[in-house]
Length: 303
Image 1 (cartoon, one colour):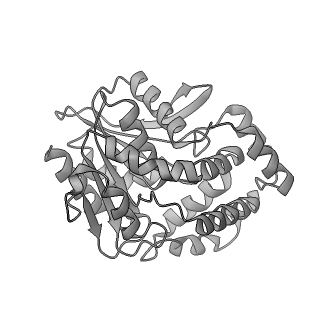
Image 2 (cartoon, rainbow, N blue to C red):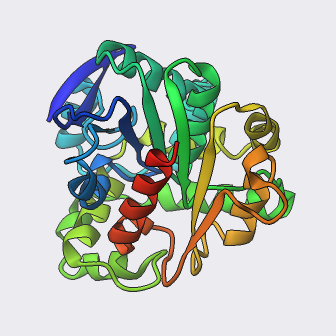
Image 3 (tube, rainbow, N blue to C red):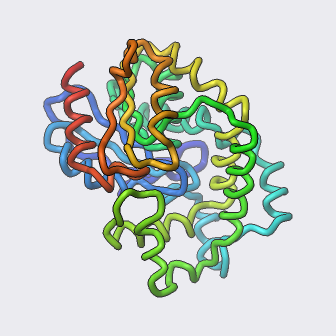
């Protein structure tokens, strides 16, 4: 693991060796995840493509030393109702997808990656779309995995935001040491149970995520304005944009993936830029790494 400082935050990243392919693959993880989830896919692609994976600001290893020390010394990373309100008032567009896309632009510039395909999971897919709009000269194409939306359903989103905030309130540090807790994470949001190593990683990432970043990314990406902006963003992209959907994904159902994909010219009339992966939930890169890697390779080579 290496780090690069961006806007005062060390960003943890891993970069494989260059290959004969001029385009790098850049992998962007989702909310409360980290770069490690891409390893099964990267191991299948790194022989032919240079691959970059990194932790978003405030997640995984991309946290300030001050925050890291505070978390290590704290008995809990949970948020009280008052601290939730204080944090909600303190962040000012620091955690929007557009802000995270700007972090990515800086990272690519510092690593001298001039031509890349972005592969984003869930929230990472939205960030990838924003980055393609911000730095079109560097981004060759986008592949969104378990990502879609663009429809603001007021009641559903309000319930989701409240549930997410409550979810973040209960993150005691000892949770990751609780016997068998990982078994709960083997089944959450997936079609078939994950290997326990990935479930344990999910527990760790859930516990160590910076409270301000976790809440900020949740709230800033689910406002009515942000959700309604996505279709227009997709419609204006000149690069190819593809969407991989899990047929059993209950977090981002295929119908919502198709909705967002339909605003891109490649959709045509029958969803030519949407690929559904059978027996797959919301973590396609862990559930179906062979299929995900194969589709990425075909799409990149095809352009």
